[in-house]
Length: 224
Image 1 (cartoon, rainbow, N blue to C red):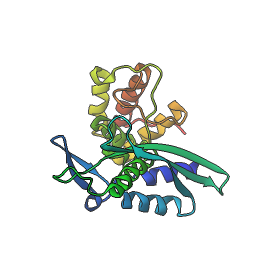
Image 2 (image 1 turned 60 degrees about the vertical axis):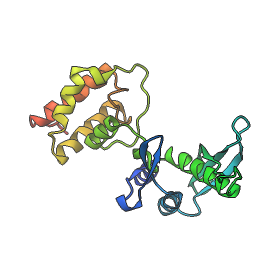
Image 3 (image 1 turned 45 degrees about the vertical axis):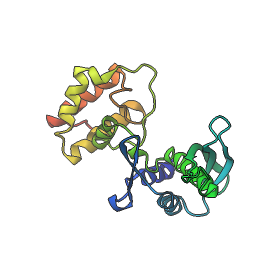
């Protein structure tokens, strides 16, 4: 289990800025990672013989035939080919046409849709996930070095909670060592659960985090 956690952390590491690319869609600039870098990350972290992907389906959309839609499934073999994790991704590509209305290269569009679906599947394993996450989630993760964010049963709408604001205010002032202590206390409190965000934290979790962050800032330590 620990090895899988370490692998996930490595998969989730941000890419170097020179590997990132920018594309404009609908007037908005989006940062993305080329599929070659995604595959390279999977090869380096998991091993070339420890993962594979399968194109489940890749066809022109039946409703809007100017789109190609692909369904790709990734399989990560984490236990000598016996145990594995599967993740699915759906991707799409708009078909490009010349001025005469003729399709430029349908093969490229199919390849693009498959690449997009592969990246979406890899994202569920952490690869490039930081590019799609909210600033708030990244902020709290930077404080507590969490790997993922599950959905709690009863979110507390912490983004409007004074307690959450107090927690963030204190946690930002903690040193690296103090943040590690906060992370350790959270792991004990939550039995190893991933860190909540402002949008998912329960009232009980907010109260715990706020109290512990303040306790650590004041220099108190838990007896071993």
